Each structure stands twice: as structure tokens, then as C-alpha cells.
Image (cartoon, rainbow, N blue to C red):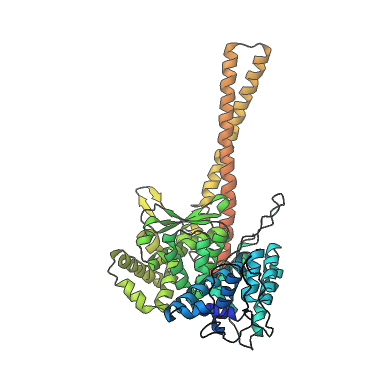
Length: 519
């Protein structure tokens, strides 16, 4: 917070009236004859009550009137020039921080007396309206109250004030916690993910780097990960043309992910700077960042984060994991490097020739990946699937990921597994029917005349029936989930064919549209 910002604060309260500060002197103290006009006024002593620092001197008067240690004109005159400058800098910084906190977090009665004494009655009234609107949890009223407070700047001789820059944008950066609602009230229906990415709240966080940085702090992003998260913003916010279109969803996804209460967490990762972790019901849970991220160049780590947040976006959108998912992640890496190279060719060259072996190695790896991407989809798939070790064969054992088209192919993909499970379940139902029949026969025999042999056989049959039912329940659960996921992947394959053409072998569309899947 710096002094020029406070000069903007001074513009808020000026007006034509010259009302006096009305604060009772401390008991036993003689009433001071001096008063300080609330409007910008003339100096009362050499260098004292300077209009450029009017709020500082009003604050000093407020302190004296309340029995605290505030400067008066005599005390000011005794200060050397450097001492005056230091007092102004410290005092104005303190006032600017206080006013910004009051804007963001509420005002007590005692604080309102201070506001009126230092900034004037009009600002005090405007601030009270903002505070009331915030307590009512009424966004429309809060917006109007803020506009009203902004409107006070129009009374300063027509001189415009950039409200967005006031207090370094503190008002926009701080997210005020919503008051606790009725815990018995039903949850509201969640807004569609694509709509949430375009919400005003997301846009406000991303409108300035400092807002975004404060947002990361508020959402408890681990400090070692913050440089990479900021580097991600620095690069993608500079995207233009095709790269801007391709990457426009990533930063909003970061913000919405954190607004949803999800976390970026430090994890002990081997060989990677980040990982996207799914949660229940195919929703994203967290992004893990390696403990070693603190030693990485922020731009190299940011490249990894762009890849992982592409996975997070896919989870939100409902795209199931296939080799295509990794191809999209690496395509995002390609876009990231294109933007970086275009925005800062010199920095790109420095990274490529870095004295840090890990940085230089990462840049060489990405250069090879970019060449493969530019060569075509097949070369790109080969480079990622086999060059990066996502797929491999060990004799007759395949370890890896299949493409979306392969996943829905009835001869080799999920359809084949589902069909096999259906046949296994059918045979299991027949076996269960045999066991249940024997159980009933033994139960009838036991009723006719119990014996230890009959009891033992009935107990064994009952356990066998329970085990077989558990096995069948497992098959039913797997079939339901796989049938659902297969239907979703088939829907994605049809959507991709419409977007890119049925002959495209992979779904490399980084973002989806509202035709992709219903919420």
C-alpha cells in the first residue's frame, strides 16, 4: 500500500461544506481551541495541515481529541524534514489499510466515529450503506451501495478517480465470507459448470494479477506452489489468436476449482511436478504439486499445472479418462509454450539455454513434443503414448491407455468388457438359483426334525448363498457403472465427430460446448 493510493483516498470526502470534527475531549483536559476543517483547507502552520495529506492531519486531531498521542502544529514544527516524511508515509499507509479493511469487512460504531472524523460524514454514510448491504447478503444492494460510495468522487472539482485502482483494488480482491444460512434449507441446484466459468466472480478474480494472487492466498494455496500458479496466469493471460481460443478455459477452471473448496496440496510425487486427483462421482478432488516444485523454475512448473488443470476441466465436463485425455493435456503444454514464446521470446531463449539441467531438459522435451504435434495427429499420438511411456507391451500384456475410439469399439473396448460381464453375471445367477434351491430344501428338512448334521449343512448352504449373492451384486454394480460410462464415452465420441469430423482419430478439442453433455 503506497502513498499515492492514499492521495486518491483524500478525494473521497471533499465537499463544499466545512463541518467541524465533533469529538469530546478527554475528562480533565482543557478543550483545544483548534479545529480542523473536513474539506481541504488552508495550512494553519508551516507544513502542517497540508491539503495533500489532509487525512493524516485529521487523524492526528482525532487522536488528540480522544486523549491519544496525536501530533499538533507545535509537535510537527519540531520534526526534521525526513522525520515528517517518515511520519506521513507510516500514517497514511496505516490509514489506507484501515479504510480498505473497513470496506471489505464491516464497521463497528467506534470505527464509524473515526471514519466520520477522518474521511467526513458523506463517506461515513456511504460506508454504512455498504456494510448494511453486506450484512443483508443482497448482491444487488451491495453493488448499488458501492456505486454510491464511488459516486462521492464526482464531487471533487470534476477530477476523475480510478476506483478500480483505489487501495490497489483491495475491494475486489477480498472475498467476504457469506453469512451462514439456514442449515435445514434444501441445497440449491448447482449451476452448470460452463456457466460457472463465466460468472462475474470468476471474471473479477482474473481481471488483475494482484486480485488473482490474493485469491490464491485466501484459498490457502501452499506458498511453494504460488509462483507456478502466478506464472500460469502470466503466460495464459497473454495468449492471443488461436492460442487464446484454445486456452481460454484454463484460468477460469483454476478459479472455479478453488471456489468450489477444492485444494492444491503438496504431495510426494515421483517424476512429475503435478497430478490431477479425481474424487467421488467423477468430480475433481484436488491437484497435487510435488514437494520439489519449490526448486523448479516457475514457468516450467506452470506448464505442468496447465496440463493438470486440463484434466480437472475434463473431470468437471464429464469426460472419462482415455489416451485422448493425455493427448489433450500435452496439447495444452504445446499451447502454453507457444504463448510463452510469443509473449517473451527472450525469456523463452533463456529457459532453453538455462544453466539448470532440469529446466533445459524440460525445454528440450517440450520442443520435441511441439514438433510431433506440428507433424500431425498420428505423430503426436506416437510421441505421447510411447515416447512418454503411457503405453507399452510386455509380451502379451498391454499396460496403458486406449483412445476414445478404441474404448467404445465393440471388439476391443469397454463394450467387450461389458458384454463379458453380462455373460458372467448370467451364469452366476444360474449358480445362485441352484444354491438357493438347496438352501430351501435343507431349511424344510430342518423344520421336519432338527439334527446336528442338518444344521451344519444348512449353515454352510446359507454362507454359500450369501457369498454368491455378494459376487453377483459386485457384477451388477460393475455393469451399471460401466454401462453408464460407456454411454457417456459414446456420447463424447459422437460429439467429437460433429466438432472435428468422423475421420479424426482422437478428440483433441480442449474445451467442450453446451452441446457436449447435459448437466
